[in-house]
Length: 413
Image 1 (cartoon, rainbow, N blue to C red):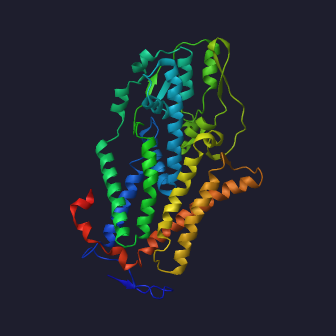
Image 2: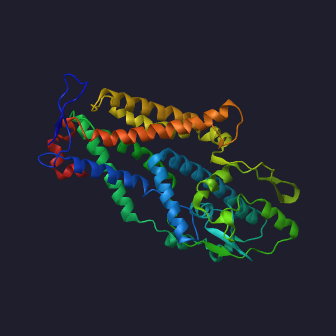
Image 3: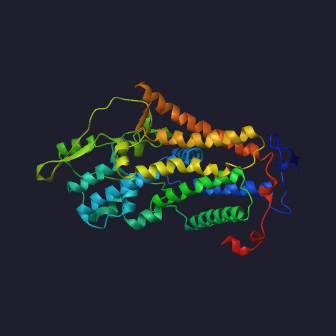
């Protein structure tokens, strides 16, 4: 065990560096346990969209993993938004065909797993397009199996592993129980443990929203569109949310940087289906200037029903870092850096979420705020990650002390 004096911490115990495993827990156990729990809270919870290219699909999943590590709030918010949109789609389809259309079907369509053939390849059938086809009676739900929408076929294509879910649940439950028991026995939590605990509520919320969503589907369902009148074809094509996820060999269709744009586009699309006489539906698509958009959210719809939950998700991650408010740090400067960074991450995220979209084009003072707030957030995240690593060089000795109950197998339940 290496000991280090606590500079600027008069009256505090001498801090320790690397601690071996015996007689209590050691640094290696602490680091491995926390990193494994964080991995389960990020990689396992990811449910990516469907890509025809295995390479782009793998790169997209890695991108989501990095996003979940740096900004897990965004993953939880996307899960909430997609869950809400799929429930809305299910409600609309149930009005047409009854209860046969389930939430898993809505998730399957929303993850871009349903496509139609073209002369150059295939294109995505967006949820609003599929709903319109049903409304127009151009397709019959009785033929859903031929469209790859049989529930058991979807579940068979999904790579969701119940054993992995069980391992994730048990590990997270054990980690939370251990943290509670340590606090109850008067032992402090390390900074790394505080950060790990911060992932868990967002992990649980995201898993709830995506519990039914298929996972890691490699092959989409490609179908032939039914015959349409010219007017119907024009209406159908005008409801396209984006062509960047089609597979026709165009330059903009072969990049995984379209990540996140599908849900954002569906949420903020100007396409509207307006009912007119005789039950027909006409799609109107407003012209919008091209903008370099980094982040989008259907802020008006969200404010009506989901805004409290969005704010809770946005604040929870940084707020749980405040568990280490009174934890002993190597220096007083590092202690206050941690406090300031945790508070900055809370308020910057809440400010950031008030913007429906962030556009890299000057539109007044609010544009600067919309750009500065995420910058402050990511800066605060990097500061806290750096502090977690730096704190391992000089921890409070009590961090490595254990209580008697931890040696009994019953504590693992």
